[in-house]
Length: 413
Image (tube, rainbow, N blue to C red; front, side, top):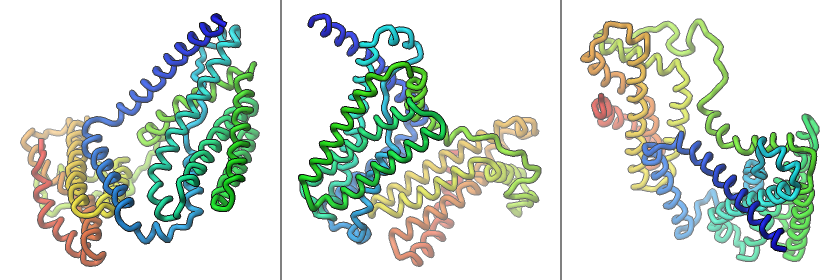
């Protein structure tokens, strides 16, 4: 008995070290893209907007679009979150192959703890999702506490079965068979969940029976997974896929496939003058503008404008004013940074450009770069403050007259 308890404590310590190493790596990945500036200008306003919106859902009357939203949207949304959520992790590594093959108890203990940790983690995440949806479930669809607990138990059971079955299918099958069996499993679980959700109000006994079946199925699949042998290479392949999932999501927007070389750009194809004045600083500003619009930064700029319009149109007054001001400073910080980066390029460094000319070109460069974003986001703010037509008619001229000359001067370097 003491030997088993000693072995269990050793496996626990080994698993805790692996668990801490994994989360420290994930934290490092997040820190690589989220610095203090992003947290200040995006994270804090997003949390304030979410907190205010969540408070409004509890205290005020629900919006019309939420009251008219069919209940079927909720189970579909929940299953979509189940589908895209994280998978099973057993914290195995390539270096363990010889040791774990020679020590079956260690392998079973490590896999079992990984299964439990994965299910608990997903249960906590899904619990937060249910908490976010509570005002809609309670006030919009008149669900009681028992039904919400059944819904939470159901999505947790579905997620546990989905994780275990997906992992086992990935271990025992390859290529098209893996995609086929995983698609059939997800389709069956999704059909079961959506059908059950639509019948939730009718029978609590049937709901408890389905949840019990899911629990038994999860235990059975977990037992199969802990006793899996001779498939270590496939287990490691799936494990590495889960470990690098967050890194892949973050790098997907930063690393893209090589672009085909084009003899002529899509925008400003003839390099016509943008400004009437041909002073040197205006020519530098035109070059900066054309370089920006011909590069990959344009896609990010369009995305920023779309998110910015939503961010100033959704929250109530005066929160939208605060968000608008923060977005303007963040936009200027980014575009001014691009201007300085453009000035340090090798081709620009070869030109006989004095520091005074670089400084004089900052204002027209910033105005040209900021113009589309400021005008469109200001239009979104005007629509949120007034009617659609009057909001655009008032906000766009105000952005031209009041804001653009100021933004061309602040934060220059």
